[in-house]
Length: 69
Image (cartoon, rainbow, N blue to C red; front, side, top):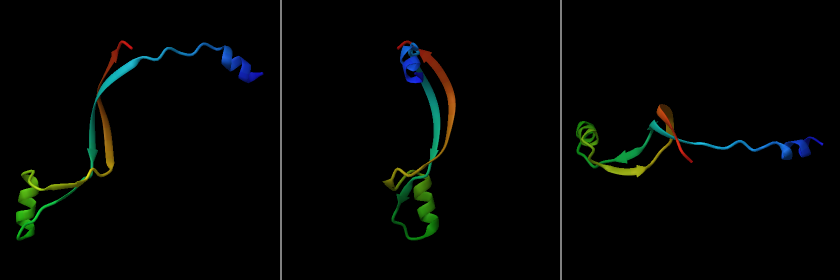
């Protein structure tokens, strides 16, 4: 009988929420350089080649806004 009771309960109306989320993740990049210092400088400048997206390490919710569905 519990299954019958569950079917008779009204389903809750879902709302839409929009959020700004800060996601920190590891990524793999590579560069061609003569030494480690040059490689670090190139990577710090954003030069290089993106190898993989990587894994999510941390997620932090910044803002949450309720919207109309």
